[in-house]
Length: 205
Image 1 (cartoon, rainbow, N blue to C red):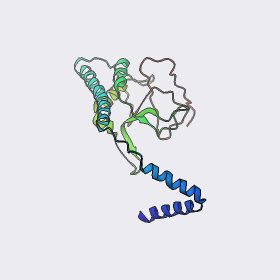
Image 2: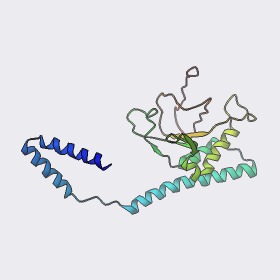
Image 3: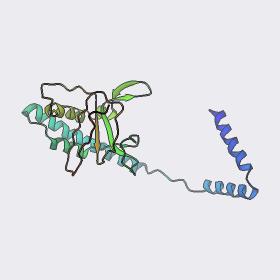
């Protein structure tokens, strides 16, 4: 609101007036010099190319998922870990700055995002994630892989209900507790890497 803006400006002016005259003169001169600095122009073409390359990466992953699903449906070709690694390898992961509970020390973001259903907290409702809407076959491939490759103790005749798939890349999450999970979670690692073992606490709830 305008009144709030005016209040802030008045408070700033009053604070400046309490300074010695020399300091106030220097402050005014500094502010005027900032006004004379040339404004940096946004390179619209470069931004467009960046956005397009990111879309192309996800589109490539979607095309790979489409081929794998087609081979699976028509020829009965099993979906392998290598298939998933190939799709996720070209996927453009979102730089997530909000998952501070999993960020290793020194990191300000991680490659992590949700597919499937996500919760909109402001409205207390659920909707399909934006990238699931744009690239539905990648999400479908992840779901089909779980059906064909159930974890130990869960045979293929048993259904494992879930709403969301969280995909992550190239970071070792610090010890944390997921607050919004309900029931059992399934974790699977893909790709060529060393270490990467999962530590969990089965009696922690």
